[in-house]
Length: 80
Image (cartoon, one colour):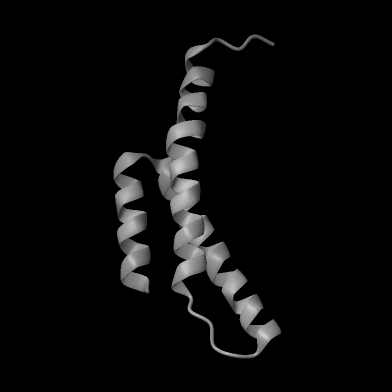
């Protein structure tokens, strides 16, 4: 599991820090969610699907929606 997590985080880090941070934080949140589900259902669950699905979703969302929006915000002057 950790090999897939590290590959995803490394690939997202090659693009930008924002993608890296979102992927890293969502993988940790997915692992936490898996532990919560483990406590609720009281039997073994696979840790990979929840974290990887969330991380890939947030990576794509960050790369194609949030990054362009950040670039637009940084190029337009903001006056107070």
